[in-house]
Length: 198
Length: 218
Image 1 (cartoon, rainbow over the protein chains, first blue to last red):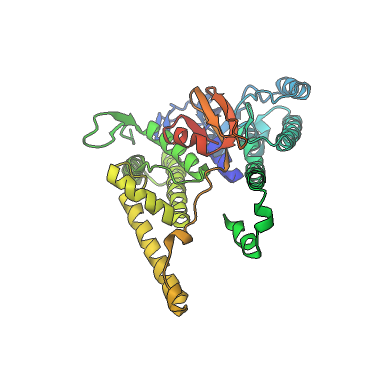
Image 2: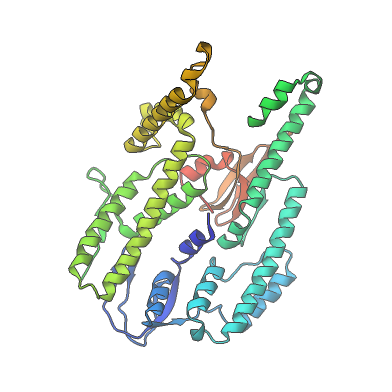
């Protein structure tokens, strides 16, 4: 999947906005939202929030976790732990990118928050690379990835799955060799040419 | 003004009514699975048809609103998002049908007999025509110019199969015990997928779990 598709999926998350207009309830296919009352916070999907923001029809209420102390704790925790810690939400990176991109004036300390989220992302990415490396070296065909968010998993594609596919192929070939050691001696030119597509 | 039918009957003979919201969620997860699974999955034409009907209904209502109405813009945006999912879902299926045309048709013939078809009738027709066109093309371009004993179109030699052993990421929708991972050394390993846990593993042992919705590919 492309990153924009992951972002697309992340845009379905619900966030809070403060509209500057009043309107009745709106009945969307993904649910009903409203009624909108100017100045009162209301929950809407992220894509709708972004659209209203671009039309300057609302202010974004930053999610609870988008706050310096909370993020500082998450960062420390992430540094301390050998494993991936649970992120405040499954699409934290998408939310951060969109909200800080379109509405940084609605988020207190937006610049610092941007840096710290980037730090957290970097720590997690480096952990992901280390664990991928360890997984490949152990020759494993299975891994558990709790608490990794979709965007992070997507960044390991297609490298990790296809590396594991190749590893499996190599292991299979090696096993065939062990089972039929005589095949080595009898193999001819024609075999080595045609066996690549199997 | 209410622009949606909140409850839509799935089909005439099916009593169960589901909301548009549930249809959308199902469609989205079917799209995600289809994008990430190596093989073609059972079609969800019921959901697609249902959603297309809903979109049409919605579009008719939007047209009654004044062009500058904010609600119209919001509804249009939502419809574009849903149309994207449907288009991408159908396109993904078509490209799999083209790529793995021969094995899909072979398997589908048996499935049609038992009534467990994966393709919609239209997709089935498309696959058959695609194969026929490919065969004719091969014949006119290459085979007819070959020596007599090499002019056969051998479909099983042309077949490209999806790699069922490719590795995929998944999230368990419910707890599943005893998924058997084959080991080349013959020591099979059994693992449990707890609800909400995420894994990377071979597609083959979990193919059925994807089809019955117990896991979601991510």
